[in-house]
Length: 103
Image (cartoon, rainbow, N blue to C red; front, side, top):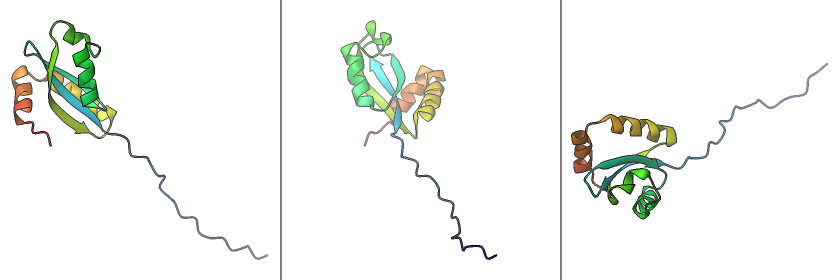
């Protein structure tokens, strides 16, 4: 018996949708403290902090300025980077802010 001719199976990589970028950010409070967080829209999140609905951190001293943002590939990378930044001394966080140049 002859087998019917079959076309070769070519493996195809599934199309993975590009995930939206996430950001780690620093916000300066009125008392000079720096708050670190993550968001997929840091400007919108900062507005929430200013309105008093973002984080309890700002109940004692209002959010004054979004002073640092760093783009990450995804949420898990942003969380890892947030943990690293939160471990830094304030002087090191101030260095991040000083070298930050938004585009």
